[in-house]
Length: 134
Image (cartoon, rainbow, N blue to C red):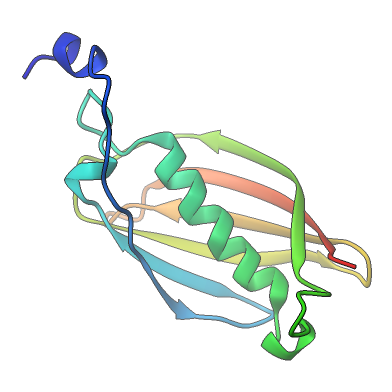
């Protein structure tokens, strides 16, 4: 199927799955295998899939300690700003997101997340700002 045919499509479906392999207040790391369903018409990973992956990994780092979020969700770190630089891309393999805190205050948490390919090349660099849900 050509790129033109792919961009003319009117139905899209697929799933994205990944694993958090490290979670804590100082670092969160996740890995995601690239699946056909997440590729754009050019055959590289759709930016939205990479951003979704990085955003959730950042949120895991922002949470820090699971007990910091109450049963009703109070304290859950809501993203209020998300800035992403798309630097490169891949067509397959496994990508890794690493999230590190820039600032961890009582009312504001800033996380920097990078997503890399198997060759350690940076694909995206994302900074997110979170505030606790009330």
